[in-house]
Image 1 (cartoon, rainbow, N blue to C red):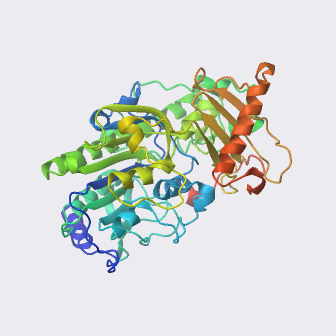
Image 2: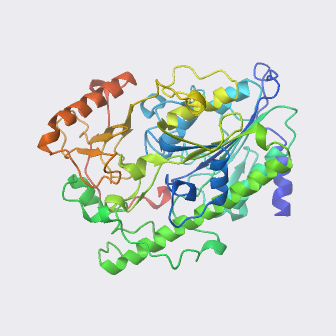
Image 3: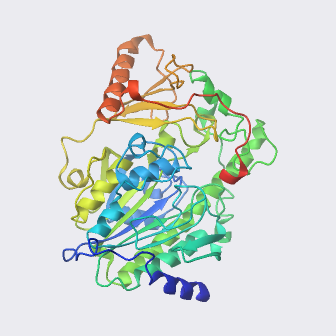
Length: 499
C-alpha cells in the first residue's frame, strides 16, 4: 500500500475546489468533527448489539455502548439513491426528485456537508456516492471528493481522485476506503473542524467477503424464513416475484447459477448468499475499529461525532423476497448508531426516526444553521430529554422502475403499532393488488395480512385516512401524486451494467 498511500496523501492535500470568500469564514471554536459512515443495504439487525444470533460486531457494539442506538430507524424510500439524497438533504424523494438509482442530486439543493462547509468546515466525501450511475466526478459542497462509477467492485475498483486522476486501486474496497479516510483526516485542515463522509460498498451485492472471512459461517445453517411459505393472504405480485431476480428461487445475485430453482435442496444457494453477506459486514466492523483507534491516537475521538448507518434495509428471504424496495419491515428498517459524548452514552431510542432526520440532527450537534424547508426533524432533543411532540406516524413512497420491474408502486403509512401498504396502478384507476395491513406490535414479522379481517374495517379506514394525512402534510396530497404506470412483475434479468 505504500505507493497508494503516497499518492492519496498528495491528492488529499490538494482540494478539488477552492473555498470562495463567503465560505471561508472561521467557524466558532471547539466545533466537533464529523465522521459519517454509510453502508449499502445493511439490515437493521446485522450487528450483535441489535440481537443478531450469529453475526458478531464488537466494534459497532462498542460505538452503541458509548453512544446512542436507534432501535426503530427507517428509510422513507428503500432504494440507494433516493435514500442517500434524503439523508443528505432531509427531504422526501418527492421533494428532492431522486426517485431512482440513475438520477443526480439536483444542484440547487443544499445538503448538510455543504452547510458545514459554508460555516467553515473542511469537508470530504470518499466512497460510493451512488447518485448518477456513470458520473464519478466531484460533486458540489465538498473540498475533496473521491468516488467511482456505479456500484464499484469489492476488489480493484477504479477510482476518480478529486477529478484529477482516474485509476484502479488494488485491494479490498473496505480496506482501501479506510486507508483513504485516515490519510485525509491526518492531512492539513488549517485549523478547521472537518466533516468526512465515507461511503462503503459493503454489504451490497454481489456479496464478496475478504478471503479471511470467506468460510467464517460455513457451519451455520440458513433456511428460508418461514414467511416465504405463508403467502396465501399476500398480494399476487409477491408470489410472482418468487422466481425473479428479486425472489428466493431466482439467481440470488449470481449465487445460484441454474435458476429458477424451487427444489428444497436449492436452499444451499440461499445459505451461501447469506454467508457472503455476513462476511462483508465483518470487514466493515474491522474498518470501524481502525478508524476509532486512529481517532483515539490523535486525541480527537471525543470531539468527533461518529455516525454509523445504512441507506436502506434488505430482505433476506422474508415473504420469499431478496433485495429491498418494498415497505415490509426488513426493507424499511436500518441501523443508526451515533457516538458523541455531548449527546448521550449507552442509550437506546425506541421512537421512530427517519433518514430525513439525519441532516438536521448533525447540523444541530455542530451548532450550524439548519436547512430550510426540510421534511425531517432533529432528534437531539429526543435523545437528551425526550420529545413529547415526536412523530407518531410517517409515510413511505416507492415508484415502479422499468429497469427493475419486480416491485409495484408503493405507498404506505406506519405508526408505532400498525402499518398499511397499498399498490397504486399509476393511472388513477383502482388498485390491481390487494393492500396489506399488519399489527406490527404483535406481528413484527408481518406473518398475517389483516386487510380482509371484517373486525378491522374501521382500522383499515383509519389507516387509509392517516396515509392521506401524512402525504398531504409532507406536500404530496394523493391527487397530486404522480408515478409510473405499473407494468407488472417482469421475468427478465436486469441489464448486467446496473445490477
